[in-house]
Amino acid sequence: MVAYENERQAISRCFILAQERRAAKSVPVERFPLLPVRLLASGLFGTVGTSYMNAMIRLPHTLSVAPMMDWTDRHCRMFHRHLTRRALLYTEMVTADAVRFGDRGRLIGFSTDEHPVALQLGGSEPAAMAEAARIAEDFGYDEVNINVGCPSDRVQSGRFGACLMREPVLVGRMVEAMRAAVSIPVTVKCRIGVDDQDPGPALDALTAAVAAAGCRTLIVHARKAWLQGLSPKENRDVPPLDYDRVDALKATNPDMVVVLNGGLLDLDAVEAALARGLDGGMVGRAAYQTPWVLADADRRIFGAPSTDIDRHAVVEAMAEYAGRARRDLGTPVKSVVRHMLGLFQGLPGARAWRRYLSETMPNPDAGPEILIEAAKRVAPERRAAA
Image (cartoon, rainbow, N blue to C red):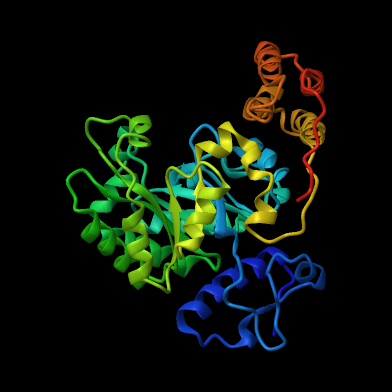
């Protein structure tokens, strides 16, 4: 067995080796890291046999929260982590050059409580992406992801995002350079095609290129992106979903971890994707606008023991976090609170909760106590364990 002093490195290495074992069916047990007993006992890695780790363990990709610009910052991720301990959380997209030359602490700093967490990078220059990936690994991220799906004009002008669907060879070169630079997984998030591309050949070409470069995980937003004529917002809704295309991709690439994104509004939709043979589901706006959708994820998706989660307890925990963030990072309370407006969605008092926070959080002197005060407008409600 290989012994790792750094638990994060051990966890990341297990993810890689489990994928390799699934693909090659020949990775010896000696290559698996020797994990601390408390981590194995946590159930994070599923059942551990006497001779090898089960290659079919449910990795965090089984459920993940999508990278969303202006939304999935470190404060949003901390909020989501109070709802699910096991789903994989993604950062907002950060360009490779911003990571290389910008204020890294502000741009990609995060709390160790957020694990497992992945950094999504935007770029098109293999060497720059490799350098940014090395920095991400040094910061402690569990994965780096290449954005091949964003359709915005700004992203296109930088030659990254969805326009890279037209350049699968370049994407493969980026994967190769990044994998040579880091030991954590390098993954790709893409569309099924852009503009007038035929989705079948376009997606197959990208898959072949990244797989040849060693990428084992592809997250597919099951829509085309129209680079001209539709806004980024419209590109999330107007192009029709084509789940059959993603299902077919998995069927023809059984050794690739294929994760479905697009239109997944609840855990039922994620479970349906898993039942069809896909390896995971990535939830986007639903996790932000109705975050309580994540509260039963650990039990339903990952098979963890049932827990009785209390939204008011989440509010109290986040109020404490907001206080620490203001004290230690100079973070305005608004930057934390804005992600929590949908917590009580669908319950009596939810509108009063949102109204109170919307009226009070713009005040620069507002403290974390506004969360406690706002929660008083919603009747206590406990979620029964299943």
